[in-house]
Amino acid sequence: MRTSDSSWLAPMAAAIGWVSIAAFQLSGHDFRGRYDAPIDYFRESALMLAFASTAASVVVMSRVHGRGRWASRTAIASAALVIIVIAIGMASGEEPDWFFVVVGPALVTMAVSLVAMSVRSWTTGAAPRWALVLIPLTPLSIPAFWLYVSLLPAVGWLGVAKGISLAKHA
Image 1: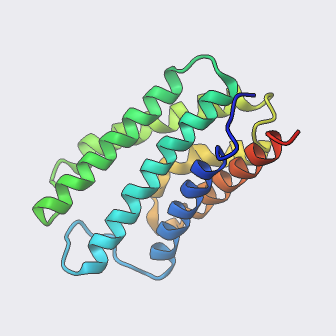
Image 2 (image 1 turned 180 degrees about the vertical axis):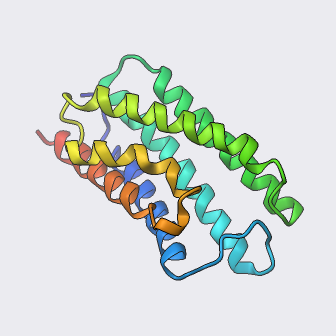
């Protein structure tokens, strides 16, 4: 296994990012496509952080199994695309009309990539298997926000962080 002593930090940051999104969801915050208050910008910044740390976590997982990097590259590109579209919305003051036309396929692509990475990581011992089942749910955090889905990938990424932390000491 090729990881550094701080490899667990990326999935831990992803877990924290998705927990913050879940906190917005659980508080009843309205996820509308406009930015009327500072909290709306904070929410979108937290969402961009969650996607950026997910991309960093994908890099860490890719290093653990070291082969077949198409899934990690695809997940990273998907996360970057989502971040760019959110940034455009924040800069313009409202979500673009074409938001889900671009973000929808990016989220589906990310889900497929995370499934592929989870399948490949299933036998490496880099993360608990229950965590590998939860992390492909990460992209559902946007379209299914009313179901509080963000809690599931948050727990999954926490499991990945724990698995990587324990594996480097084994």
